[in-house]
View 1: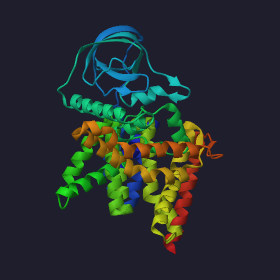
View 2 (view 1 turned 135 degrees about the vertical axis):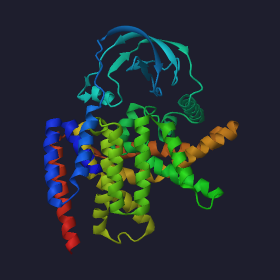
View 3 (view 1 turned 180 degrees about the vertical axis):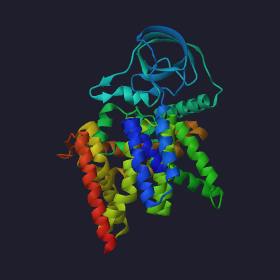
View 4 (view 1 turned 30 degrees about the horizontal axis):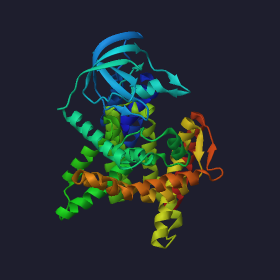
Length: 457
């Protein structure tokens, strides 16, 4: 049923309603031949098509100079030299780019005066589609903003001010670039790491380490359960879910937070159950749930696409590859290294074509880089979280509390720079969608054939 919903939504979004209705005929035929309840599958399929019709249309808004009162309706996106603010007015949203000072907060009311235009394509990147998935169809560069009121009592206002205070603690506790990476890892700031280091992490295939993801949420859940284990014999599930929900709201916008929460819980369940059946059902259910909220994530959100390809690799490709090397290696430490290596290969097999289409490169060194860098990730998350908690209790000793995390972050930067110097660590490898489609079709045919042969043996 959930798969039918995704199928109907996908065909209507990527093609049009006519193609989607033709697909409905094939679905009914399939259900009739397999004796499946076609009315239930068809209803879900039609709901998927109908969901596309509810996507807001771009506003009928002429570019030009405007003056109006607006409210900052999303957490300010802080960069190294500027900030981006989402301004809401008259049921419209404008993404305004302004300087770092004065600081603005969620809920602030401002008077806007400046030029408004529509976003376009930037060096082949569909910036308009990227913003459309957030319901933003208008932008403004360096407008004049006059703050007229502050909102300090609302839930999100308090939450984001807390996040800003935690960022200030980290900024005072260690120098750059370590502080910027710490803010990205623990608080979800996406742009506190310099472009130079972002490109470096991307080249060696570990950029997934920075963004708040299901991996982050899984590690935070484990840390939380360890802490709760001190007070409870069996940590309550409701406490863990409440903590995770609070954490993802603290660390990201609603779209990124929801995806991280769902993917994090999904990863926890898969790793605890270790079953393809449960993993497949949860994967389809979570995708249907998130696409119900925002269908544009399917085509305009690269993070969404890469997350699900990585989860498919975790559920299917990783066990398949690992089954050919049973009981090797035998040493426990070597098994951990081997698992990271195989998991990275499995993830690359599915994500590399999509990365090649969007960025035009392939990280040859990624398996080694993940082995050398990801082992320290749980340690970093624990020491950063512990440093923030201890800093709240004893502020004068804040720099001492963050020393373990600082040395861990220093290791990441140093190791990344050394790894990037390896010859041919990254190669230019640009594909088009046709090539990527052929690769995925061929790869899954090979997977199906070998898996079928193995099941027969």
